[in-house]
Length: 193
Image 1 (cartoon, rainbow, N blue to C red):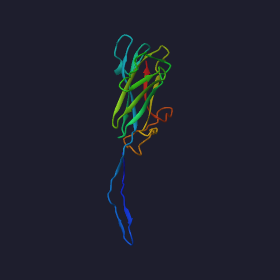
Image 2 (cartoon, rainbow, N blue to C red):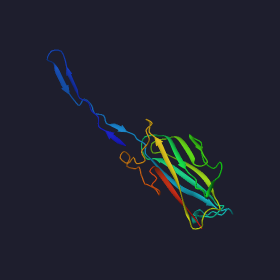
Image 3 (tube, rainbow, N blue to C red):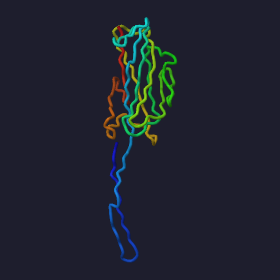
Image 4 (cartoon, rainbow, N blue to C red):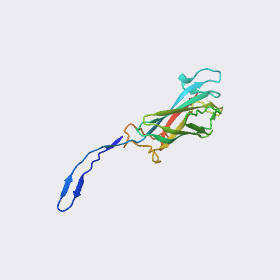
């Protein structure tokens, strides 16, 4: 949220020698509302092939189903438009067809990568999407699999929202994840046993 001070002065030359100067006549500060996006990705649940809830263990085995939640927060006061969330599914996991959430101004395409398009997120608002994957037999025991979600969006003028918008919105967080992903991104590690 930026505030730009604004005032005006006037100068008038009238008929003959009459001149008048004054100011500032009035002062009005302009408040600039800009969007800034952050993203979080969490494991909502891990359900074993036998129906056992393994979420608290935070480890997976082949056949388990993992549900991911991805939340995009607009920490700025301006509305974010045409917000996209992109998630590429790792080769060791299989997307569960039809599990990606959509609706209410959100569309999804995929399956790999999954791309959600959110029409708009108001200032200080958020949207959450989710999807499920099944763990395949190609996972390697003891390995850690890192999965990313990336978000982008535009301001009301159609400009791309910078990944690091902390100059205008101090609440914006910008962390470069594993692999140096430069956009607003979130990562989740899945460990096998």
